[in-house]
Image 1 (spheres, rainbow, N blue to C red):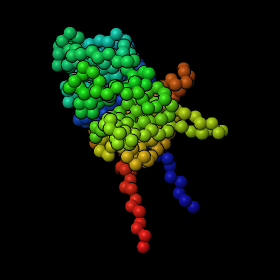
Image 2 (cartoon, helix red, strand yellow):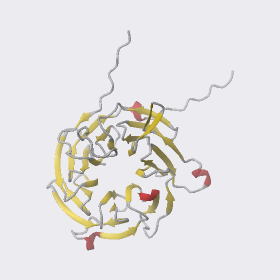
Image 3 (tube, rainbow, N blue to C red):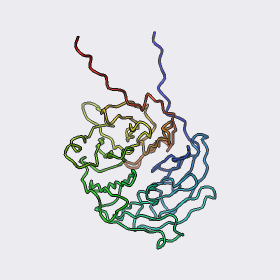
Image 4 (cartoon, rainbow, N blue to C red):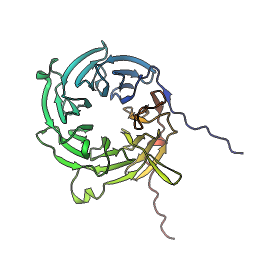
Length: 342
């Protein structure tokens, strides 16, 4: 009789989770600290290894994004239109500046030393965080976008901006006067998430309609021939295809493989180069709202949090799981060489 292997656990659940929807979570580049933004108007700082809440920052509205500056501070994007700097050791909050509508995304560029924010006011703003508190001293520039900003991603000096209306703008941070490239998403439906490849050659883009597109920056015909899209986070039920939004993409920092999270409650790991799914984790209690690998790729943080894709309804409590990553789940499998004929 074969032994029944229990399904892999979801990972360790962090105590003191947010009390409303989780909008994003991010591991630090320097430690296993995890920054989490939520619709409950907070940003929380956790030590993921110790399962300890290290700080909590209240805001004037729902917090739609957050990112680290270093291990002592971070930044947040809020629905109250304010961009804030969060100083962890004294739980101090500084106002970096404002937008004219909800601030949807925030990124810190180590290459440029700037904070970049994207808003539903259809602008991108760059800030110098070294400036004293006050917009006139910290704002570097405002850059109009074709529509509301939904997602941002950085790699080196490249910035990718995904907006409503399926627009994609690619910028060089050293010359923000105009986009280096203006594109349209190759997916037919609304963009949910964009994430640059760690090697800087392109980006992955997900949509509300259970698809991910793999894109390359090089606009030559030979390079563009390498781009492709694939279906994921779907299931067939009574002959009907049920399709789920793909909310999150996270690249593994060592192997360049990537995880996707969908409203189906699943996290899948993909090898983009070989166009293969490497792993599927057991189902989480709710939609996957956000994903982040730790700096060495040994941990994966998963936000299991209902994203209101089916309107207001009873749902599982919002939770953060931190799972240890096994190499077999994320390492690309070598291509088998054909056996030469005898």
